[in-house]
Length: 130
Image (tube, rainbow, N blue to C red; front, side):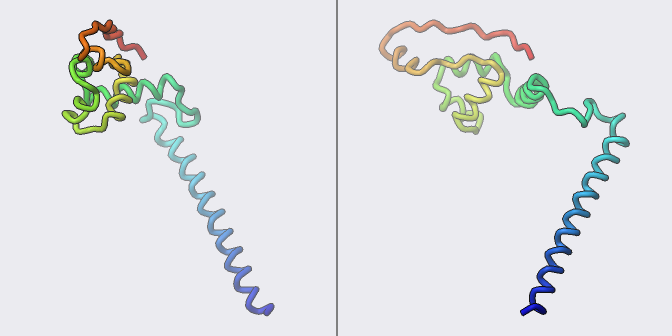
């Protein structure tokens, strides 16, 4: 029994040593990358991005695929899920895009009120600040 345990212990210690070595190499690589790539980076790698910076990046990424004014007009003329089909995305995704781009969407029950002839106040498109 003792002879069969020895290879298992050795294998476990070897795996542990290998994983520690991999972790050391990963940290060393990251440190070298910080030193050599710093002149090419827009922000410091040692700090995590702020919420404002994350929001700005998300808005920049989303704005490439959507025109805010056009999107605003479309979501107030037809339900969001129908507009989403035109963009070939889901209604939930388009709702999140509208939220990120600060495009107001019709409230729950809006289309039923319109169908029954009631007038509903439509908010203006706010200025995009980030």
